[in-house]
Image 1 (cartoon, each protein chain N blue to C red):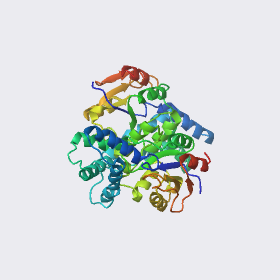
Image 2: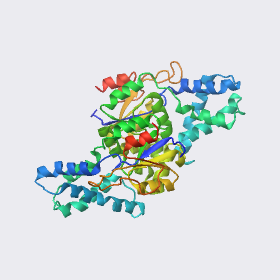
Image 3: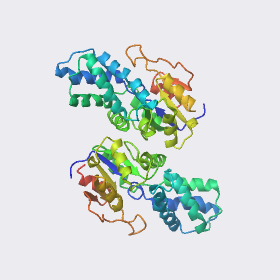
Image 4: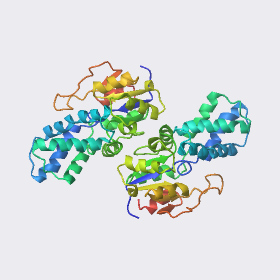
Length: 234
Length: 234
């Protein structure tokens, strides 16, 4: 692998623990209103709507919109399934922004600070810019720029998103590495010419339900982001 | 003035001293090749091509391109005027990136760090993303995101650039303040509904050649960015 100049990061699952955070946020919001449910199942159900919603954009069936808009639409879809069809608009708006209040995995902030001394760093996530800013401020991520879906006007794994990120940094795809805990993201990035780095997140979807190792060839794999930084020699 | 959530910054002239930096970079690059000229005049001539080049984009005569591309085109235009028509492509490419190596005015980095504790901060400059990243790394600017012309696909003072910045942060224009040392930038931002903050840069174009005060009504004016932060109560 030749040295790269920039590292691009997937965020949901790779840098932040969306499942625990969404379950907590849902409980904190809905429990005082008298609702009792399986909060982990609620987080999973909401996340299950994520790919189908983006697929409509990728396929051109609906125009691009920020992920916040899709998150709200997906929330509206799942609430009735949990007997929550009566939850009002203000609560729905607050819940939608739960995705702005996710906590990072414990290794991330410190490892990003190390990596920043050698590489340009940007999230290349399907999350919108304001969502990325909220997560960065909450968790102490020091980005050089916010790239990803909103800048590209389409959703990963569409090639446009990876190419747009490289172009924004004036780099060839070969000079960039996509870092993710999801093999499909890395497969798509590699097809665009980017180098790839995998991080294990074996508990992303619950205990033992996540990628403990890549299922595809990658340039480097770490058991967490600190380990990846070690392997990159930072 | 109601409180705002985000501060947007003009960069060339407002945060960085382009004239001294470009004169220095030109001298460092061209002097070893045996060229002798008035380096300040060279910087001024290059900058004089800036607005006309962007005007072609604003008017739709040419498609949007990154400012780096316009800087190169403008350099190619002025070199012959200084007897430098024979300068080769590699030197021209290096000179073009002189705009990535500008030094900040001395008050800026520390004041931005203070302001970041209360506001979301982004450059809303006509410079491209990679240029903004280089300036941020060189001068220690801690942005929340890089917004501006490249994200909007047009150049200030077109309204689209100000609106795109507010939209990226999910804010109404009224919740954002444009900060600049140029009254025309602030006039355009105010017409879009943004609050406005002026910083004096009386020596931007040479001693005594710059805006020592706004020539239009603004919400707040500072003698430098530290003074503006004081006046915002940070």
